[in-house]
Image (tube, rainbow over all chains, first blue to last red):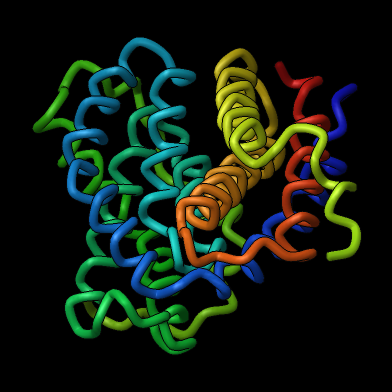
Length: 178
Length: 91
């Protein structure tokens, strides 16, 4: 390949680490307000982009760029990365949107147990990330079923998710039921 | 405040816009390359996820009126701009 993905990757990881440091300095109240205003329409947004997925991955995935950002804002960057890695391994088109939506929902479930104004404690971050990663084995059938109910025509001969491309999967403890 | 000027060729708002366009370019690149090896596709999607996170953090910071820009923030902008530059070959 004549394009250097690895240089891009390294710069992205470096910048992501800097972002994680900056986000710690932002007021919790502001995070709460920001999330509240941006998460409200997330389901509608993802549904809209799921429809657009039938017309091209570029348009569809651009929607996910925002959707995943909403899901992980204030949380670990690794969560957003995992969403994309799962989607990429799954190999479908609109699957990315469904994965992002589910992660957003799990995040909201966790938030219900604590104040959104509080930063996530490391165990919460770890749980959220492990949920996202552990979705990989089960996510395919469930997500495809969801998608089929919404837009049966946009599923483009999906293949089963490969688990080999999720490096963190093997390093995690066995899944807890959720 | 030291080194503030080093990170301001574009400004945070333009950096956010450029990051989102870079994410779109990477998405389009993946769309144009169906035979891309899985490992490289995962790498690109991971990068898109990170770009999403980075742009949200910058937006979150500059929309907080109490947020005090410091050297760490300027370093973030500087490196985000570098990230945009490295994504241009994929456009």
